[in-house]
Image (tube, rainbow, N blue to C red; front, side, top):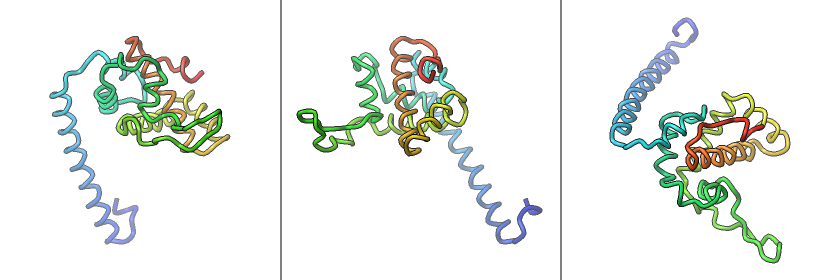
Length: 171
């Protein structure tokens, strides 16, 4: 690293940051190990891992925060619970303001946005969908659209105990 950086103070600061990152990586790994040992994993966990963009901690978060999937009668209910759809108040077909945007589960909203960001980076068909959406609207809205599609897919994965099929969601 000393060959890349010119200033000795920058080298010192960079080495300190790398040391802190390595320490944090070790602590995070230890925490993840303890969490996985304490939680009883359901078959839903393994099903969620079939989504390429969902790793073990995101799958664990989605599994625990969703709970029993049978409590959601329709896919729209879980999409709303995950904060993946708009909250609107309509009267006589006219928009009368935005509804309670804080309804739902903020941890599921976070988990699906994280999964969407990973999916856009690593899955070509999801990246195509994202780029098409982004060309028509803002990037944040496009990521939310990917998160919405992943939430819908995860509903069917959890309900039917089937593996993820990207062609069904992002064809």
